[in-house]
Length: 274
Ligand SMILES: *[C@@H]1O[C@H](CO)[C@@H](O)[C@H](O)[C@H]1NC(C)=O
Ligand SMILES: *[C@@H]1O[C@H](CO)[C@@H](O)[C@H](O)[C@H]1NC(C)=O
Ligand SMILES: *[C@@H]1O[C@H](CO)[C@@H](O)[C@H](O)[C@H]1NC(C)=O
Image (cartoon, rainbow, N blue to C red; front, side, top):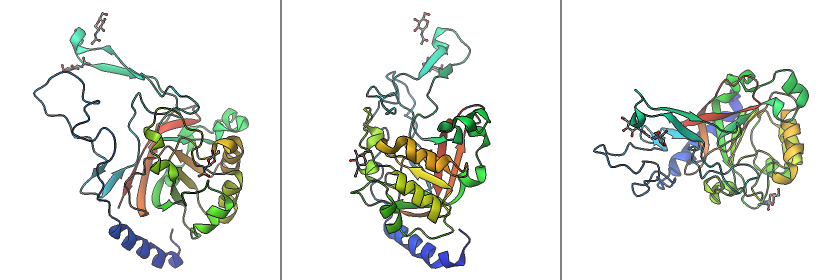
């Protein structure tokens, strides 16, 4: 991102993103005043807490999905289901409420480690705790992928992502179809075909690949594309991002996974800052 040749590109993009500043907020389920599904059924004197997608007057975008029972899980039509319990509750005489959760590590917005598709990397300890926070944090480009295709070599070429760009979030038809808000897994989602992944590895400096459904790889190339991305152990895949209503452009990206030792993935909180 430090390449001087990028400067005209960057300023053009920031102009673009100002022009495109979203008027559509909020369009995320759970944020409407009328949608009380997350606030519980008890009556209380307190007004419901705000649930936000943007902070600080549109400067900070939350691009992680909420964990809710209705969210999709890879290859399942049942959705996540109950994942949170309250074994100790004040209503039952405990001094405090203490909840527990159980969650697949690839649930919702999450990050993959090299051990996900390489058993030798898994055995050698390349877990999510070993991912480079420098790659997960820094300038990132949010681009729109042509909506009529998976991410092929051809599509990658057509995006003209300049050399030097190290983090790219790919917004696709998945966002328009609101797939992350549908309980049933949809295998027709858009992702990287093997040739698209290869093209990225061979022709760009991208080290962080962000996508807007549960897998960076298209369903029919699940294994092949992951193998291409993860082989070098230099590329980090952030999957299931919430890119709705965020103008395309350059942002400061912050992504922090949990330090799950021994795990090949982790839920991750990602934000974009203008
Ligand atoms: C947790 O504690 C608060 C405060 O006492 C109470 O209002 C709330 O209902 C409790 N939650 C549950 C699920 O018991
Ligand atoms: C309180 O404990 C009872 C009996 O173990 C259980 O049936 C009930 O669900 C508990 N309530 C809460 C709010 O945890
Ligand atoms: C992307 O590929 C999947 C197969 O993995 C297919 O079902 C889907 O229709 C393709 N989407 C587009 C927009 O071409």
